[in-house]
Picture 1 (spheres, rainbow over the protein chains, first blue to last red):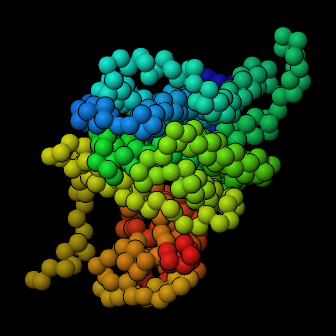
Picture 2: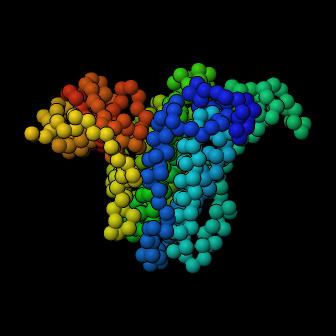
Length: 377
Length: 92
């Protein structure tokens, strides 16, 4: 499997697996092995938004009037989300594109990653409005121990995969010594790294974002920082879609019809996948502790957030075929968050409610006799 | 199709009104059901179906196992038996 930006060998793309087949040559969507990825692309495009559309001017005075411990909660969450989207805006492209072998999945990855860059730009939009000098917020990210710790945990699976796939493409399977270091390279191990990376991305989108989402919506429940909450709703809507994307990829891998060896890979990664979810839940609880170190906010405290983390962790684990990790977390302690993440009515501007399922230019021009069945002639 | 369909959950049996979705019916009757998009793409509301069958006007984007359904957008075709419980019991 040598990567080429345009593979010259004519192949039947419908027979290629999602990953590690022949690199994609013609980007064609007239035939699709997995139409779901094309549907995700269409949905994502119909969700398109620009940060500047959302008026965040009221947030400035809201922010100024927040007590210090709530300022800390607000700004810290933003910093954390900036980190998450900095990683997500580039990594799926860098890590997955060289390995993909079907066009609809390739384009989904690009579309997905692009939407993360919108999120990144929206944070600058929010921060510009609430502080005079945005650099004060941005400059701190690289020096904040609590944020950098998680950055390592999230990026290491991507980095592992990227490094290993470079070795594999350059040198192939076997034992290789590069710069005095010996590497055992095999396709099976490369597939394991891809699977674990996909699982870690799933965890990121399924759990890591939701602590900040909860805080943003808790402010908005008190009618504070509502511009920010509008943006977070749009982000949450996109993230829900990205999550579905990784859930599909992981489930197709586990199933083994696409690539029988992938099912074996998935089984061999089972224990690590479980551990990954548990570890992420633990880290998010520690994050909640850091957020509330100087005091809780109305409607949300560390205990509630811990319960919520356990609850959504269980929920997301089930979606990728894993047994829930937390036996007692069977109910959602903050059910009001659903009303905020509910996205069939995402309000973009006060005068305009954008219905998210609305697709531009979709007309059904086929009329069958059945469509007239209800008419009385 | 325009008649009430019987829904059996872990704790209750109720009639689903033809004007409401299964998700709305579950909410009305106090069941613990998660939701987010309410239009079939996020998969948050998925529940396990033990018996009965449903159809979708449009195939939902969310990933579903063979025995799972999406209450937000499915149309029950016959009485359903699903695994979801009441909120009151869960929080007790």
